[in-house]
Length: 174
Image 1 (tube, helix red, strand yellow):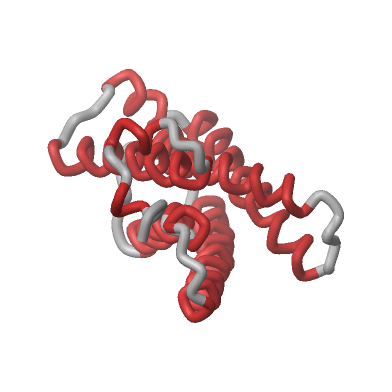
Image 2 (tube, rainbow, N blue to C red):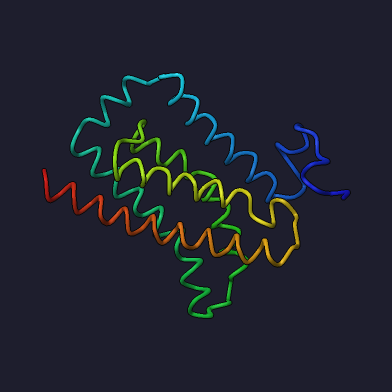
């Protein structure tokens, strides 16, 4: 089991020789900070005030949608069998994936209610799934790889559908 995530100490995880482990640690750290501010009721009032503005909400909403679409490029390239630069695209997907909770936080410091809560859970849950990729855990188990891939892609597609529904509702009822 030498080389597995369980055998690493904390300081070696922050800047690991395996970038996948570094992505896991930084991504989970950002997610933990987001969760902590929710659970402890901490707020940056200046950001909360910005998020009340219609222009800010639209701008950051489209920023978040753009982020999701940019992340979807990897899946589209794989579906189209465009294997040129796939390794580079995969690396960019992982690096950008770390910032999912931050992009979400810029748009909303709260998770909302009803379908918005579902959207937040699916989006942030998919971030967690992404952080625990077989590459980050250094697991070569084919069953885990297959089930992880199906889960990650399914949640990504569901996120996109829920975002489109959210945009529809926002414009329909505003």
